[in-house]
Image 1 (cartoon, one colour):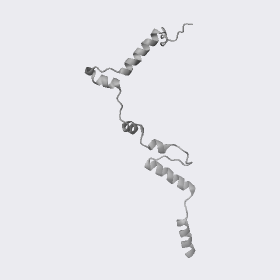
Image 2 (cartoon, one colour; image 1 turned 90 degrees about the vertical axis):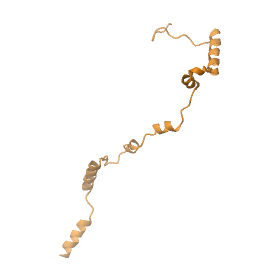
Image 3 (cartoon, rainbow, N blue to C red; image 1 turned 180 degrees about the vertical axis):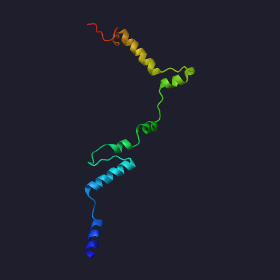
Image 4 (cartoon, rainbow, N blue to C red; image 1 turned 180 degrees about the horizontal axis):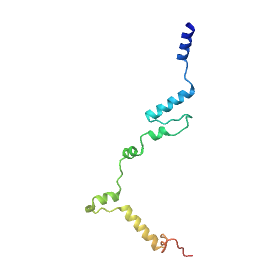
Length: 113
């Protein structure tokens, strides 16, 4: 009688087999909608579950206003961009000396050699 009780307590305290543990994990994954990964392969799931960083980074920095943005918002002010005027005058002077950009091609894909 004592040997039967001792045997029953050993069976109750022994660890389940590897196959049964694997089956248990598989059932757990199907119940809780998680990924079953018995080989512990790297899947990148940790990063895919994470929150996207792009939108919060865009909101962190305030939008910079350019001179063009101000001119578009308030056209009645007739503001003059001095840097742009200087650039255009320099470009005209370079063109007069023959140092301007080359003319664009007449037809796309055709070269005049």
